[in-house]
Each structure stands twice: as C-alpha cells, then as structure tokens.
Length: 148
Image 1 (tube, helix red, strand yellow):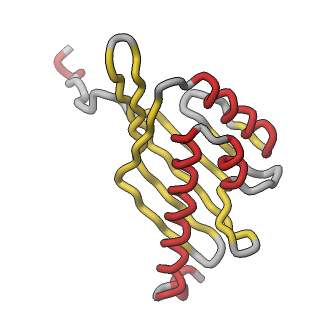
Image 2 (cartoon, rainbow, N blue to C red):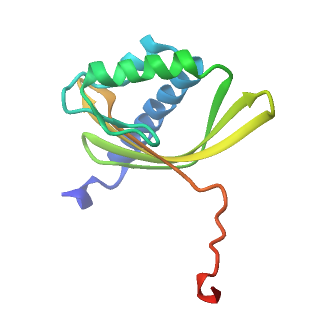
C-alpha cells in the first residue's frame, strides 16, 4: 500500500520524477520534438490536455499537437514554480504552475497555467503518461456579487 512506500525508495523516485518533469519542460522550451518524444511513454492510453483543448489520446495525436505548438509558438518561454512531487513504486505525480512568457509586438505577455503531470516507470525510465494543463485566471480577486 501507499504507506509502506515511505523512506528512501519513495524519495529517490520523487527525485527521478522531478528530473523527468524537468526534461519535459526543457523539450518544451527548446521546441525539440525528438526530446519530447523521448519524454513520453509510447502507449495508446497516454493522455494530453492542453489549455482549452479537448483531451488527446495516444502517442501520434499528442506528438502532432506538440509539433504544431512548437511550429506556431515563436518567441515563447515557460518557467515552472510551486513544484510538488508525489511518488509510489511505479507512478509519480508532479504538479506545478507554468508561467508562459510570450514576446509580442505589445511587449511580453505572461499567462499562468496549472499543470498536473503523471509519470509511469517503464524499464527503469520515468515516462510521461499524462499532461493536464488548465489556465489560471489572471485576476484572482472575486467580485462580491451579493451587492448587485
């Protein structure tokens, strides 16, 4: 069970999962489709949800989506923060906030996305099996609707 996975084993896996997560964002920033292919598991059950997109399933559709994003993303950089990692023997969850910086004519636009990345241990290598990203509202203050 999950409780028996405390101690060194779990911590080592958390470190390795965090490294796999870093490889994912490195491939993203370099717009390197070959590196991105190396990050993902090659299973039909893998899933990717880009912000505002319907879920994509399977290796080919997911890689095609990344290729399109890399082609059309121009001057874009991603930085991650608030990284949290949880690992069991062969599964790891990494959640983080993605800050996307896009250089446009009007200046640098920053948008925030919350991502959950799921990794599965395959032949001693942590492979991404799910990436789920949702936009974070820019303005966190909620209006008081009771006054209307």
